[in-house]
Amino acid sequence: MLVGLAFATQGTAGELMHVDGVRVYGRVHDVSVTDIHEALAAISGKPGAVEVIGSSEMHVYLQPRALGWVPMRHVDVVEPDGSRRSKWMPDGRVVWDTPEAMNLIRTADEVYVFPVTTPLKPHRNDRHLRLLDTEARQKLVSLLGEQENWFHGLDDRIRTGDEPTNTGFLFRHGNAELILFFSSGDAVEGTFNGEFTRGSIVGKSAQEMEGWKRRYAQPELAEK
Image (cartoon, rainbow, N blue to C red; front, side, top):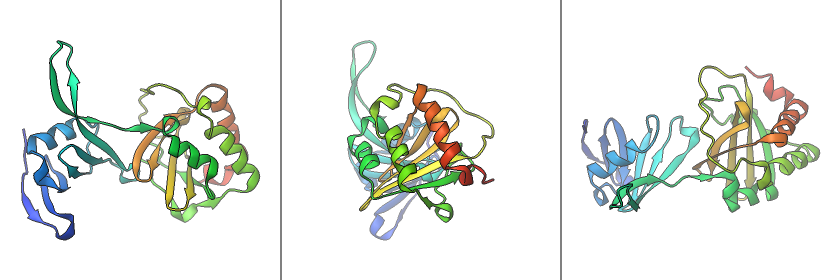
């Protein structure tokens, strides 16, 4: 059921409305309320906001906001019974399968580490950004900049409760930014130029990543 529907004007952002208690803005008249409801239902958890880009694309912002937005696209799908219909589906990307993100890891002008004190609700800690020295950076890039070190599949592990402090990384080249938040099992969530991305480091590389943290990120891991 759709509730809390209202319209208002919001300057250059265009129209503003609320669907199921979620703020929706942008080109809201390019889609229907049913479209918005379907896009919201396709996202796990409670979205923070929706930006309507056009009749075939929306950006659903996640909570916490540090995880950026997921592109939702209106696509034709084939149902199990063979019928076809159009529906709204997330079109998120993973780190290892995004060439621009992998290239940024390898070519960033600056690479920073910072503490992630709440890995299940991460945020970028600008107060504690620390620029990595050459050795730490080279070893980090050798781990994260190779596709073979990432799990090529869907990491469907569910993490609950509290987790100890972990590490986050900021890769920057010009206006491009990749932010990675690590949690238990070297699962990764983050953003590439604001768009949500994710992945997991696996096998021997995961062990090496844990060793990297212990050697080069002791100040960050000590944060509470």
